[in-house]
Image 1 (tube, rainbow, N blue to C red):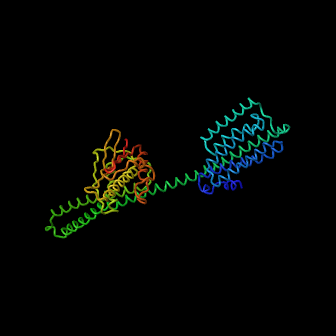
Image 2: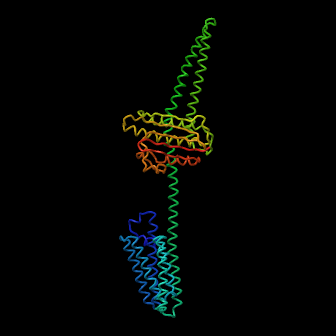
Image 3: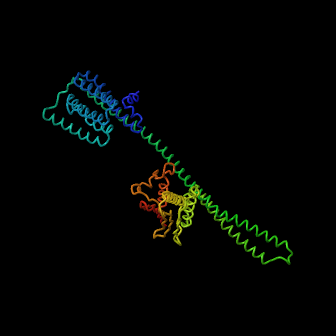
Length: 461
């Protein structure tokens, strides 16, 4: 019932405002409780023959309801809250004076003012009203010291009833206001918790979507890259079959007519072919292994890894992946790999994902620039590795359009992307940054608009 009455005074458009609805309910509830408290006090005022107090309580209750109605029909909340607090600031000293000054129960209500202000306007406003309450108390104290303590307007014989009822009413009012606040806060916390759980689930789904997207890029590259060693395996297998047929033909001849020198040459060729088949078979197996490592969930165990091999593998796969989607695309891929680069302990699948993402972004950038048909422009990506004093550096640079200075600080933020809608999740660089950070490294970016971008990974030993 109380909830329905509360929501009646909330502007209809604010009933749909989500988290802000809590503060609206608290504001309306405080005014309703104040109005009810004032109206209930009228009967007591009549009982103890304090007519002036009764009239003041009636006026206060009516003002509370009028402010609520005005708020419901368009009065700004900032104005409404100021009117309410101003009404309290005026009525409390008058009530205290009518009840006997600073020694009356109404004087204690001065410090209800900052409490109510905190509930409906916030901490900063509460400070102002706290100072104002202190000045009101000092003002009443000075007034009494100059002109004497006022005589109470109620029947002195019923002072005990008045004091008991006033204290009980004040405490009940405070309790109900705090109960409304605490109930609202509990609901808000529960709402936040539910939203947080939903956000975590959504984030997990988006991260998985980003991983699957990068897996798709990897698979496209693998499909192209694995074709080369398989072609070699098929070709050398066919040639080897022909050589075996030649040996069989020689074997069918009489021993005196056999050309043993030819047989030995064929056997040597067969041995060489088998070595090449084995080599390219291992190459195909290595590519498949990398794909499986990329797709499986990481065990969290770091292993010593040759960064040159890993970087070369993933950048080439990225290039072939883009070529698989756009046959017309071409870029000059340069490798500046430091010789004798020490192995580092990493999660290969995770660092591979970072390299794949950086390469994908670089190739996308140069392909977009190439669509502008700039005279003399040749898309280029350079992969470099370097041994440093504390570890190694891997850099992926391109000669694409570069990153505007205005958005450079945003590129590692989750969901930020410069790609058209549907072309990216905006999580690639964010995840890459987190992966490198989890490895104790740093991912940095340098870019000059119109000239290109360099992403640098710094890993320590």
